[in-house]
View 1 (cartoon, rainbow, N blue to C red):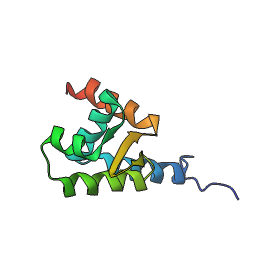
View 2: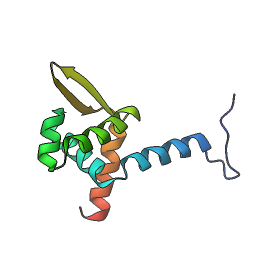
View 3: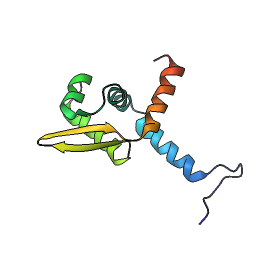
View 4: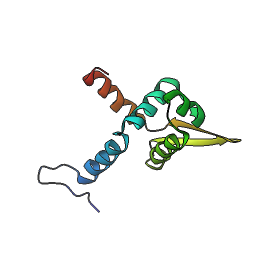
Amino acid sequence: MAEKSSARGINLAAVQAAASMLKCIGHPIRLQIIDLLDRVGELNVTTIYETLGIEQAVASQHLNLMRDKGILASRRDGVNVFYRIVDPRITHVIDCIHHHCDV
């Protein structure tokens, strides 16, 4: 089945997927988490929330949402859960934000 397109030939499914991804990362805490993971690599939840100075429950909520959207992946090692970026497009988006917003 062919993808639906708008009158201008834009793939609506691609636009909706992009909007969903941008909505997911468009929260200040999520942007901080992504930036931290992009700079440092895989980290456990404790390191993430302590580094960002946020509550554990808040960090877990944001991490789980990004994992569910396919932006992050997680792995368990004993009692620790580690997160890493799996979608390289996210780091390109963050780079654009830094470049264009002087962040």
